[in-house]
Image (tube, rainbow, N blue to C red; front, side, top):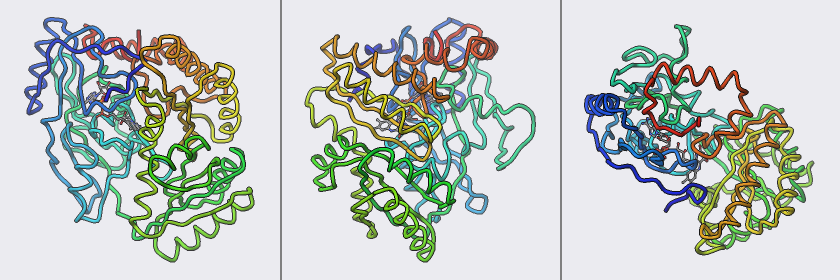
Length: 432
Ligand SMILES: Cc1cc2nc3c(=O)[nH]c(=O)nc-3n(C[C@H](O)[C@H](O)[C@H](O)COP(=O)(O)OP(=O)(O)OC[C@H]3O[C@@H](n4cnc5c(N)ncnc54)[C@H](O)[C@@H]3O)c2cc1C
C-alpha cells in the first residue's frame, strides 16, 4: 500500500540487496565515482516520501542484513544489522525479560527508525530514537565505514567529542547508510494496565495529561483521539466507546504501584470532567485496545474506500495543544475538508491530523497540502516543530527552512557538503 498520495512515485533504476557492510561500501564507491544517486531502503514504512528515487539511481535495500548480532542482558543493550525490524528484535528478546520499547506502530527496520528519529506511543516514558541509540556503523558516500561512538563501544554515557551518533539519527539517508546500530534495552514491566476515558472537550483531555505529568506519575502511554477517530475505531475494531475526545492510557510497574497510579489518574480525569473511565486489565483486552489504536489509519481509510491517507506530524509545547487542535479544526472546516481525524501522542505535544483524499482528484489533494502546511506553520508560530517523528522527506523542505532559519540551514548544508560532496546520498530529501 502506498501511503504517499502527496508525492508521485519515483522508482529507482536499480535495486541492490547487499548482504554485508563490505558490499554496501562497494556500492557506495561505485555510485560516488559515477555520481549516481544512492537511496537507502529500510522497510518502506516512512511517511514523507523518503525512499522515493526523485533523481533515479540505486536503491540499497537493507532487508537481507537482518542479523541480531549481540544481546548483552546485563548491560541492557544489543547490536543489530540494518534490516532487523523492531518486532523481530522484541520476539528474539522475549525470553530475556528485556525489550526495545520504541514503537512507531508499523514494523519498521530499526536503522530506518534511526534514520527518521522515530518514536510513537511509548516516547512519553522511554524517549525517541535519539535517546536510545548508543552507536551506529555508517557507510559514507565515498565508501568509508565509521562507527559514530568508536568501534564496539556501547556506553550509556559519553562526553567524548562531537555527538556523531545523533548527527546520523534523523538524517534520513542523506549523510550515509546505517549498517549497524547498538541500542538501549529495558526490562519488561512486571505488570501493565490500560484504560480509556472520555471528555466533553479537548481541553479536559489535555489538562488531564499535563496534570498527570506534573504529578510525576510514570505513565507508559497517554494517547489522544478526537471524536471522529473514536467513531472510526468503533466501526473498524467492533468497539462501543463513547464518541467523544478521549485518552487511551497505559500504566506499568509493580501490581501495587499500578493501583496507586491508576487511582490517581482516575481522580484527575474526573476533576477534568472525564467520564466512563474503563479499565482493561487482562492481556487480551489490553492488546485489543492498543491494536485498535494502532489500526487507526486502516480504520479511517475503511470509511472512504479508494482514498489515500496523509498525516501531519506537528509537535508543540504541551500547553499549546488545545489551541493548535482548535485552530486546526477551524482551518479544516474553512477549507471544506470533510474527512479528517485527529490523534496524538499527547504527553509529548505531538499530534497528527489524518486526511483522506482521492489521489486522482488534484483539487482535493491541493486542499490537503494547503491545510497541512497551514497546521505546520501554526505549530512553528507556537514554538513547535513541523515534524515530531516522521521527518522532513520531500514534503517539508520549505518548512524546515522556516523552522531552523537560513543560517542553521547553511550549517546543515555545510555538514552535508563535507560528508557527501557529490550530493549522491538520497538527493532532494531534507533540502532542495
Ligand atoms: C501505519 C503506520 C504508522 C506509523 N506510525 C508512526 C509513529 O507513530 N511514529 C513514527 O515515528 N513513525 C510512524 N510511522 C512511520 C515509519 O514507521 C517510520 O518513519 C520508520 O522509522 C520508517 O522506518 P523504515 O525502516 O520503514 O524506513 P524507510 O521507510 O525504508 O525509510 C525512511 C527514510 O530513512 C532512510 N533509511 C532507511 N533505512 C536507512 C538506513 N539503514 N540508513 C540510512 N538511511 C535509511 C530512507 O532513505 C528514508 O529516507 C508509521 C508508519 C505507518 C505505515
